[in-house]
Image 1: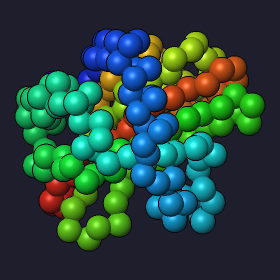
Image 2: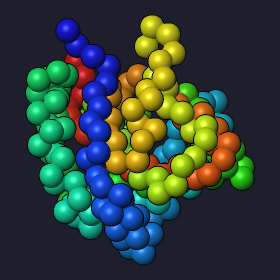
Image 3: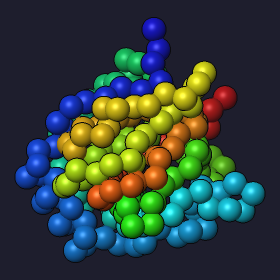
Image 4: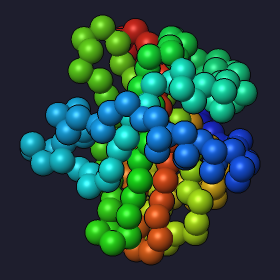
Length: 186
């Protein structure tokens, strides 16, 4: 049986989360270019702050979980994917309750004509409890993925599935998101 997503509990400890957030805040490379964010009819679907950092800068935190990610792909999704490279950009998303920040339904895609995004990985890096900011996948109906609400937990899902984050109503939601790409779907 094939599933739309998999999850892991506690891939990062609270100590790892604090250290990783500090490294990203002090060493990120770019703010995400709005030109590349998900849009519908030329309207941006998110009002979230996204900082981007090269993989090699945070590799030590992610290397221990990459085996599980690749293994899950091989056993459950069986996509032809490339290994993540040192200069691939990783997204650090911060959702603030002040503006009820959210990310409306979208799919993860690339403008590269030779490859597609196959899988999306999201790790909860929140340091405080937040309200709202719930994660949903739409596949034969809306499905809330409650496992990603806990700091340190991780999900992997098919990038072409519509997904969203509901408005954050209290506190601050932080996530690390990255993509596994491969040759175009056939």
